[in-house]
Length: 205
Image 1 (cartoon, rainbow, N blue to C red):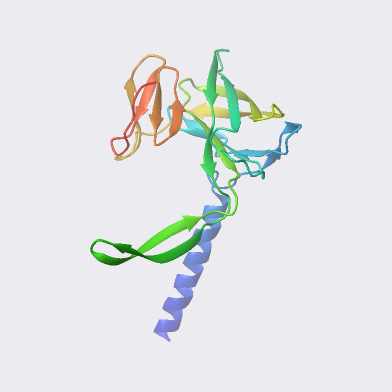
Image 2: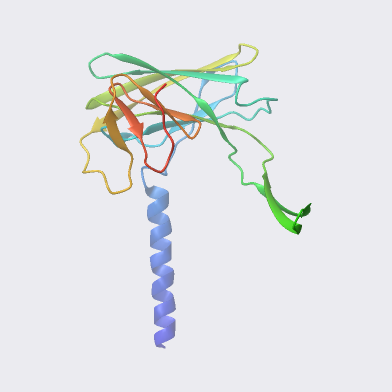
């Protein structure tokens, strides 16, 4: 009897946890369709973000490019509450579907070894990231452009609010006027700070 109650309690807690994750503002991303010649859907990671945290726009575009890192360009202009305009580029992120995992045996100087590789059927995700430095309502406008010059456009807003003290291990800011950091192939842009994570290699560009 006690084991049944324990199992039922665990099941209820698990369901509530999954439901809370699905309803979390960070996870509940509503896709919108961009306007233009290209079929592009986009979403934001949140509608309200703390000062200097990372706001992210995700673009989904189901077209296979020979070089997805270079055949698509993304330009996003963020407008602050005080009307300052800041331009940020986007980058190829990967696939919206899970990978096919392959395990092969390869021959090395020390004998046969197992090699695991990951393969994606599609490469349909791009992102743009930005760290706001001013409290209030921000606006953004983007242009998503392919190698042939066709475009898709969209816009949106989000609120920058006061946040709590950063938790240990979070990204922290180092004052460098109007800098950007290239972190793991991506760029996180802030008007007056360069964002550096001690676990990642970052440099000003």
